[in-house]
Structure formats: C-alpha cells, structure tokens
Length: 98
Image (cartoon, rainbow, N blue to C red):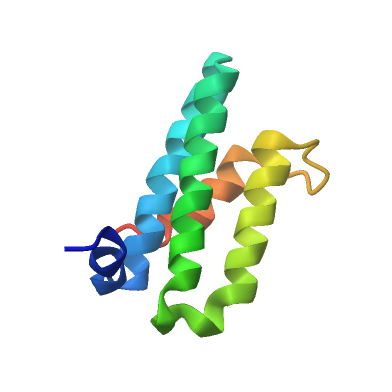
C-alpha cells in the first residue's frame, strides 16, 4: 500500500501526534547541542506537516499547518524571531497525544 494513502487513513490527531514526536526529538537534540540531529528531526516534522496538508480531509487546516511549518523553521533553523520556546511547542503538539 502507498505510504501516503496509509498516512491519509490516520485521524488528524494521530498525524499531529507523529509530528509532535519528531518535534520532541528535535528539542532533545537541540538541548544536547547536536545541530545535525536537531535539523534532521525538524525536517522530518515538516515533512509530516506537508503530508498532512496534502490529505484532503485537512483542506481547511492549511493555514494553521503553514504556520506550524514556519514556526518550526523559525525556531530550529532560523533566528526564533517569534520567541517560541520548547514548552510552547510541546504544549501545542501534546494536545494531540492521548
């Protein structure tokens, strides 16, 4: 079965919980000072968010998902101009776990 089709069968909460797992890993590697692993996990989270955007059931969430992508880029890859913290990131994604 196509990986994308499998992804699309998941409820959006599960999809976003998967993103949260990657964000958590990026945070942990950032704390350890491993920039390459931080970037890798951030990019994986962004890849998942892009897949969520492609899922037809999430059409109405595209603006929120675009913001999520920009926030991750700003926090992990940019200058953190939005002053995001580990806690605010995880508070958002933790809401989907459970």
